[in-house]
Image 1 (cartoon, rainbow, N blue to C red):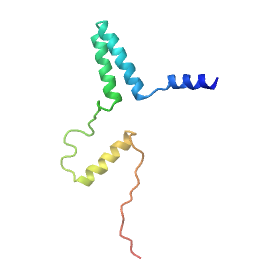
Image 2 (cartoon, one colour; image 1 turned 180 degrees about the horizontal axis):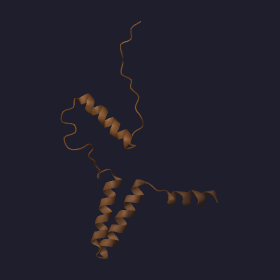
Image 3 (cartoon, rainbow, N blue to C red; image 1 turned 120 degrees about the horizontal axis):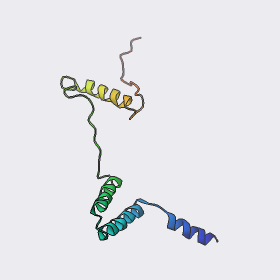
Image 4 (cartoon, rainbow, N blue to C red; image 1 turned 45 degrees about the horizontal axis):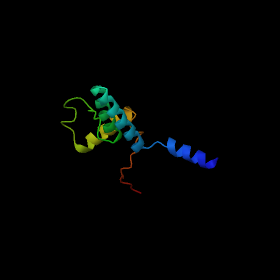
Length: 100
């Protein structure tokens, strides 16, 4: 009984390789049926899954960073990333002059 369960678990195992193989099989079927658009969607999905399709987003208005120093740009970027919920709040760890 345990051997059957192990075999079933092995067959049901999902990895990136198994997903990519399934997509390739589906693409082959789509091509045979003349569904080229569907086959091309498989290429897009494979690109996303393998990290070859990178979404880039512009942050800030045109010219917003032109007259800023690099430290000001870094601070503004962190602020915008926090507002967008991409990163959590940052903690200032800049050393300060302490006099006793």
